[in-house]
Amino acid sequence: MPSTKTRVAIIGAGVSGLVVARHVSSKPENYSLTVFEQTGQVGGTWVYTDETEVDRHGLPVHSSMYKYLRTNLPKEIMQIPDFPFADQDGPSFVHHSVIRKYLLDYAKHFNLYPHIKLNTVVKRVTPETLSAGQVTWMVTSLDLETKVETTKAFDAVILCNGRYTVGNVPRINGIESFPGNCIHSHQYRTPNQYAGKKVCILGASWSGIDIAMEVSNYAEKIYLSHNLSHPLTAKMSNCVQQKPGIKEIKGNTFIFQDNSTAEVDEFIYCTGYRFSFPFMSDKVQIRIFDYHIEPIYKHLIHMNMPNLFVMGLPNMVIPFPLFHLQAQYIVAILDGRVKLPTQQEMREECEMEKKALLDMGIPKKEITKMNERQWLYYEELANAAGTSTLPPVVRKIYEHSNIMREQDFTTYKNLQYRIVDKENFTYSYCKLC
Image 1 (cartoon, rainbow, N blue to C red):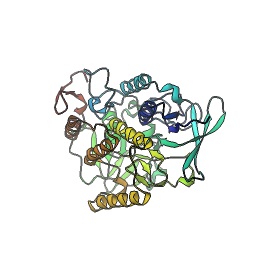
Image 2 (spheres, rainbow, N blue to C red; image 1 turned 135 degrees about the vertical axis):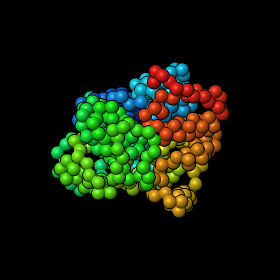
Image 3 (tube, rainbow, N blue to C red; image 1 turned 90 degrees about the vertical axis):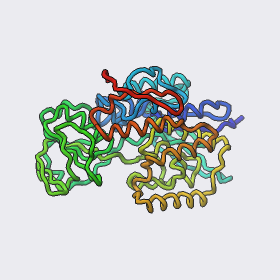
């Protein structure tokens, strides 16, 4: 007899893939689950490798993790709500290896490995419309060890292939004349190679600032170039000098938008990443505008094919708890507990939301940057899925740590946070951090 279980495919076993796998697999009577992971390990971008271009299978290296990275958010709010960190007494801003172990423990605790196909790359995802109008998904994958290609049908597909793999590299006049080393932050691994060098870093978001602070311990001079509307006011290392965006490059001479110049030895693009779904059939018609994707409802659901989900689109959020709530919302949809609006209603709602944000002065490419909007989004997902939203203390720690970061980039990771209860927290300076 054919199975009556809903067949679910998850593409990617990084954090979002593991979290949604945990919630789907918690109902084995309802779902059969397959997680496709092209590398030999779970953890996605949290798996460090010295490789920067291609892996042992000749595929582009997935992870952008650099050797000495510590988290930009305290672990007390990063943790997945139903799986706290084992060590609640250590530093708040932890080394990436701590997160990696945490994810391994998470996968083991929820017995996710039986569902995961490691070293298996998804080649094609194609929708097929059945006679009754339902869309089923044909997923073609390649076992990288045996070279055997397989195609299987699924009732729902959840994309969890991450957003930190394909670097966004803007075109700069004269870049071809620059004789120095030039990389994207995706290829950055260690700071010591910049010892005694004059380095230009383009971009002053999370990775740009983080890498600038790290490299400043070695470099002679860092020019932190950005197009922010105002200079950063946080304390930085003495060798870091802010510059506006780059106008032109002539050999080693960088000319900035204010016509000032600097002699540069090394150049790092910290200019973000592009969404990429190379395996997706053209029939799906995912449209990517800079960092905005359409037609996606609730930053999660393909409007025309509502059994296709894209995890982790929102930016400027607390990612692990976000995945936790998105996963439960997806399961509630698959269970039938959440009834989606019609396609027309979803489109109208999204257009209204987009217009309201544009009217507020938020450009289309920044719609996924939630910041203050994230708290309402979490609440909407939680209420719809019938689960708990994040306690107020999470927001309080998030906002406090951001304030401390904006005051001093060099020391904010030395703060140690402790949650007292759902409303309150304490913090102190951690001498060993």
